[in-house]
Length: 363
Image (cartoon, rainbow, N blue to C red; front, side, top):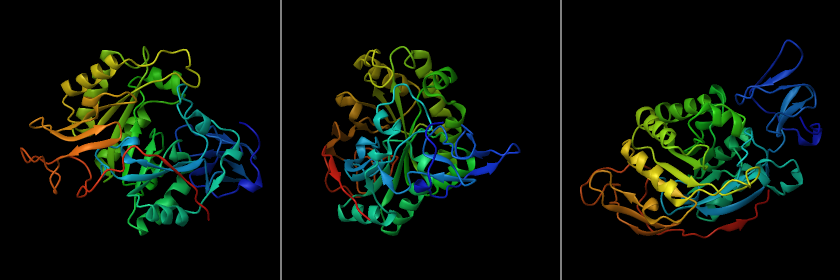
């Protein structure tokens, strides 16, 4: 518990209850933080003020950028479109390998210089021609109230919403939060409890429950990402178990992205992931029956391509985040064998490309 929460940071938060010992418990995520007056939770952005739970980052962002949707990464959610991306500060996990640690682990809220209302964000996305708005950089679960209000404003303007999340959330807020989302990329960080406990300070099972909920009880488009860290979560046995679980519990049409680790934060002495590991992971997932398997954070042409799961023809050819060729029919079928391709697609016009544009939003 760091510096006390102040009245200047007050925004009423949901999902908490009183305990018999006078503390209040946050019910947003499985950390179940129990707080005295003025204390912050492990995420740092939710805390107790005047005997209520407060969210300290409502309306405050670490910055706004327009990205290609493929960077989230989402390869089957309106390919080629642009997305207005933003995050706040803090995180409810403690990943030693965090690659956005300067944002997610920030304890200096002076970094949250960009303030924006929900309506201003939606209006800016519309003006810039963005198909969607993404809650990313840090986990949007911890600023759920803000994200949900932004989502409502976006939907009024027919703009989609995307959550890039670790999926570490309790059932009631999970239901409310994902009811506002059109797509999610969930980090399945590993497939062992040991990894989750030692490397992230969390547990595996709540994440698996979130994944099953998203797939079977919502209309949210779902893709997965697993960052492969040499010697920690990249064994053949673990990758087989992970891939088989996805095929069995979520279905073979859920895309998965295996991405390369680069030394960062508390793992600067670890080696980078070699290309051979990404290729091995992709082959294992294909052998488990998964139809759409991608690689990321390293240039691998085959790992960027969307292939038809029936006839193996190339449907969407990518070069990093830019689409080079797009062959899906207007009804999202393979033009060669006419099988339907899983995802959310519009009639394809052009690709946003690899650009990244910083945006300032006021109001």
